[in-house]
Image (cartoon, rainbow, N blue to C red):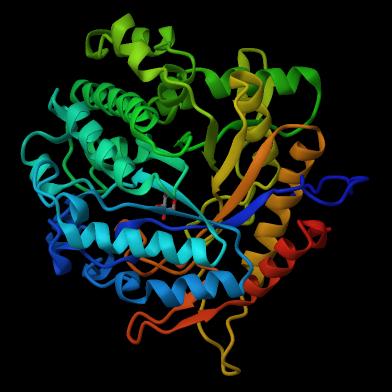
Length: 460
Ligand code: BGC
């Protein structure tokens, strides 16, 4: 792995927002325990063989019960911002119509607690826990689905925007669509055909657009609207102009070898109001045929673009454009076996900034490991410290070059329900014992506290 040069200025920009991220279904415990409705993930957990060892999110970290302790812990650890998501079926048990007042009470109190602790709330409206009741009505396939999402967004904004200004419409469209509906590894866990999934994408992007409009129209305090897609890129292993250009081109091409993960499907309609021509050509009869009017709805102003960044694909230029660099035997990998590619975060930030010109925020980055509490009562997660330090060093290079990155929310605050992997993969800077629900900050949590206190200087 490469390391960047030590820069002249060691700190991140003033007012850089340091914090962590979570998602409702991964930490709260199921909404069905407190008057909410089931999400597609509740149903997924009931199906044998879908989630590692039959784990379920029924209790998760029981953040619903322990949210005050969790906010106090974030404060002790010096966090300045907290990215979390609202559970749509906790607020609307059937997805639309009837409200669950206890859901609103919960988020109301959580927001108040954060503000008291001087931690900025950064809310994701949808992080995959889709109301099961709406799935039964066709889910994202239903042409009414953008209206459903808009109604939910309007209500949530109306309720919380007297105190909350920062809103992300949806998290990683590619994952809930492709892993949820094409490969079936995530909820709802059904394999649809590609024409159906592309129609769902059209409805999801329309939902995003309509939610942006609802936020702008109904927010009581000037809102900052955001979107958090997967921001993996192809990145150059050498820094020649040819290699950089080849990587940039292949990042934004709808590549047949990994078509559904092409960033352009999720970024271009939202940030440029364009449906990529190469995607349309590849899909042929399965193309969702998005009209200009629909593209205009998808293409709402984004104030800050969230990037969820974990890994990039190393490439080099070749006679026919670009070639993927083969993985090296024994290369560093995370608990999930994702390659550790710290320099790629720099290229991700740079490529998305150059193409879209919207200020950025690293809404997710982190690593899973099989951590446990050691005999001395502490959790020695040296791998996570090294991983984060390396990624932050490369992120710093981007900010030192003047690319506007407003903050970084580490994935994740604490170990949690890692979707189909259950409680096996631990991403937290805080360890959670899933029998007792005891929280133990890991070594990385204290290391990160120093990073925050020095505004990044201690990463060098
Ligand atoms: C998701 C998180 C998830 C993390 C690790 C991201 O794709 O937004 O919910 O836990 O990656 O898999």
